[in-house]
Amino acid sequence: MSDLSSTRLVTLSADDFAPLPHRDDVHGINRPSRSYWQDAWRRLKSNRRALFSLWLILGLLAFALLGPLLWQVDPSRQDIDQISQAPGADRSAEIVPEYTAWNGSVQPGFESDAAGLRIAADANSQAVRLVWDAVPGASALRLYRNIFPIDDELAFGLPIAEFTSVEAGFYEDRLDLRPDTYYYTLVSLDQGMNLSAQYQELAVDVRRVITLDEVRERELVAPDVELALGDEVNLSFHPFGTDYLGRDILARLMSGARVSLFIGIVAPFLFVLLGVAYGSTAGFIGGKVDQIMMRIADFVVALPFLLFMILFQVVFGIGPGESGILPMLVALILLSWPATARLVRGQILQIRQEAYVSASRLLGAKNYYLVLRHMIPNTLGVILVTLTFAVPSAIFTEAFLSFIGMGVAPPTASWGSMSNEGLATMLTHPHELIFPAIFISLTVLAFNLLGDGLRDALDSRMRSLE
Picture 1: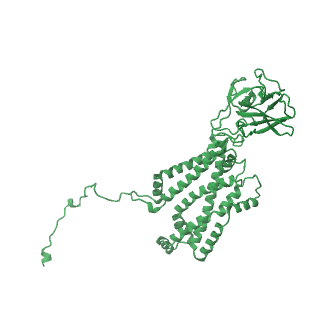
Picture 2 (picture 1 turned 45 degrees about the vertical axis):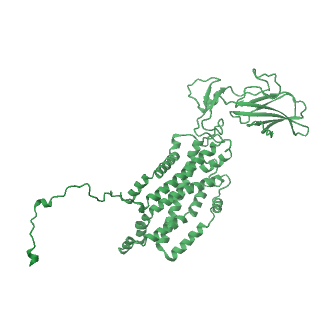
Picture 3 (picture 1 turned 120 degrees about the horizontal axis):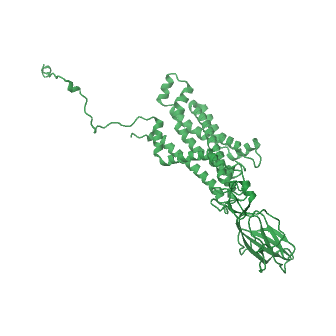
């Protein structure tokens, strides 16, 4: 009775049901709704190094695919007047008459009372004309040419002529002359045709010249431009210089990018795809089948890559001096998939124990549905990271094989073969090695940084609550 007597009736009005006023100090979850891939893209954009690497990779692809449309230069075309020309080098040439045979006479203005080795005419890239007086006491004479001054070790350079007469003579040098300073040495030989200590040295500055017909043939100037002897013209422009055969390095880098990136992207895509199929099958079936399949993968890992690369070259009939792109692709695909298969298998073994997989199985889902709908999509992040790290490895493998002569062979351009060619002229013309090496390094670094960024972005444990 006391409980009933203490009960009080409360009458509610319409004001009691009015909405509460908005309060700024009320805390709540204000994180926008994002999917897994939207959240991963947001985190990837916040990683500056990964984002820069992504743009760099897109730039390299544009360089390989769109570059030849803008820089329409044949990568195999030779410019014999600009062999091993460095970027920014002088490319001017003076117009001179056509070459005429020389009878040993001295051009007016080059007469000299001084004895010894001297030039008889203006030295240019057409010819260097030398004359000398009699050399008493010698049995024969030998003429050398060098691009370096004579040192204490008497390294005279390249022997270009030998004369049995020691009387006054002349010689015309037309052997691969370029704008440079050449050092000619006339050495006396004794009775045994051995070098004596008596020699004459001459330094000659050679300038580049060109004929009027060559200017018109190469279209170095507009057809309506009037030219005369003595005028100067500029030879073809090569932004990255030329190689040892006079080929444009920029055009060859673009051509080589298509080869290197093709191998570096197609081969990883195929062997990662093979590894995904193999590893997911082994992980899903499990048991003895899984054990047998993994032992096969272990066996493939133990196979020597270079040995099988040579074997595939023999099988495909690739002879010396021929490009082995197809054997390289086959070797990479058949021998590089086990790492991906192991990784995917581990992910599948973990995912198949999840509750949503068991629920889907209870609802009657088929095995192929479980694999394609639940398991592989949940390992896609790991697969993308694996693919990103596999690309620089394949590019480096192609560069290494081409460098040792087992990959892409000249005249087909690739960054590895260009580095191999540039190694021979590294000391005198370093740009032939530096440019392909820079592109290889940038590509490998960009893919590695992108793979590192994707690994962080696709890790669900790093999702923030912002």
